[in-house]
Every structure is written in C-alpha cells, then in structure tokens.
Image 1: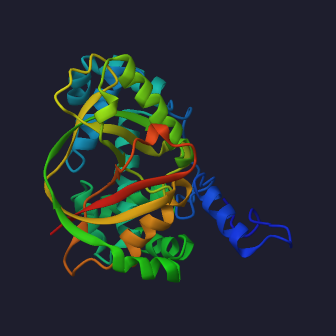
Image 2 (image 1 turned 180 degrees about the vertical axis):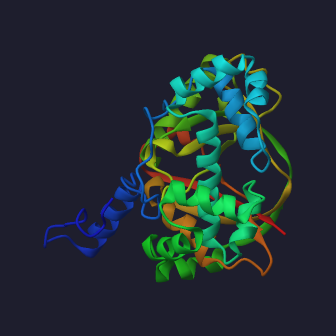
Length: 323
C-alpha cells in the first residue's frame, strides 16, 4: 500500500477519521511497507484454509524445526508420501515448492529480526538456520532485493512509526510467567481483515465435532509480520486450550503454549486497532539488554472471538521473552 498516494482523504476528513481509515487499511497491508522489493515468484496464493492434512503435517514440521536443515525425504515421510508425490502436491496446494516455502518463511523471520533488533547480521543468520554469513547474504538478497544491512536501514524507514500514544502505552506492559498449555488449532492464511471471520469458521468446525465451546479459552497464534510478509502468505492459527478433546477432524492440530516468561499488553478495542498494540509491545516497550522475543505472538482472548461483530475485542497480546 502506498501511504502517500493511497491515503488521499477528502479535505473535510477529520483527524479522527483519518486515524480510523489508517487503522482499517492497515489490516489489509496491500503492499508490505518493509517487504521484499522484488516480486514473489508463485503459481498461486495458498488456500485460506488448507484442507490436505498431509500438507498441513509437513508445514507444522517445517515450523517446529525452523533452525535446522529439513531434507525433502524427511518431510515427505512425515506427510506419508513419496518424495516425488509430496513435492508435486505441496506445489499444487501452496503455490510454491517445499524448499521455497522453507527458505521464504525463514528469511521473513530474519527480516523481522533485522527490523527489531540491533544484533549483527551473522547472529540473525544463525537463528534461521544459516551457518554461513555469505550464504545468508546471498539468499536474503535473492528474496528481498537488498543485502541484510541495507534492508535493515530501509525497513526501519519504511515501517509505520511508533506514535507518542504508543510510547505512553508502553508503561502498561507487564512481564509474567505463563505455564505450558496444550492447544487445539487450525491454520489459516490471508490478511488480518479476515481474522474475525476465521474465528467463526473455526468455531463452526469445533461445534460440529462436539467441542464444548461454552467453556473454551481462545488463543490466536500470530506467526508473520504483515509489514514484511505479503497478505496472502500471512499465517494465523485459531486455537483453543485443549481439555483433552479427541478432535476427529484432520485439520485440527495439537499445538502448545510453552512455559516461560512473557511480556503482555491488554488490548480493549476493536480488532482493526490491533497493530497499534503490537507496535507498543514489540517496538515501544524496551526489552532488557541481551534479551529478545521468541518468534511469533499469542492473542489470548477475554471473550469468545467468534461472537465478535467488529465491536470491542478484549484480548491480551503476549510475547515470550528469551535470554
């Protein structure tokens, strides 16, 4: 999205209306502000709700083992397919090959690190599975059209700046310990404007399979930064705390909240204002020296998100702190 040409409000637009327009458009991120300067080579976008459990098993494995090499044979075996059929099916479903998916998602994660942290390039390369500085630079340049240090400069200029209000809200961030909790979740792809509808679809599937929704604790798993990853590739897991339910549905996966120390921020506003809260927590709030956030974020809902109708959506944004 070109913020200079696409935000052409009428001269009568008030400051409050302009702010709301920006919040609503931010959910779409038509073009990621800090994304690749090169077009993505894809045959098609992934489905909003992938329905092949074999591909979903492979995707979960890719995301769980995101710092080590993953041979195609290992992924194919995990999916229960031959190497040839797995590669062909993955490309048909996801619009890119398994190796491209692995490389793209890892480099998007590296881009988040370059944007947020001052760490050396090699340190960030190691966290996404690159042992060689040169190999990382070559791969990053192929994907983003910039070398890593050049990208860091560009991304910090291009990303949406933290506001004075977000700086003030940083004082509301709390650090607390969370216990490990099992989750039952479902993967969606697409922009944040679809999140509330994704929750309704997720709840329908749970209800159809007898899950006790009246006692459900909803947890969203956020994986990508939409300022970097294109809309159609953004990953979001709708999940509930698992009371030991036997899902009986091939698209439901066992996930978890790891035990640990978390920075948390309360969000008590419509979902279309969520990015301001993320900027407060991830950028305006200062991590202690030598610490970083684990990849991804959690949205712990205070009321069932499948009942929301674009009104207030009370939830806590939660980021795990790593030493």
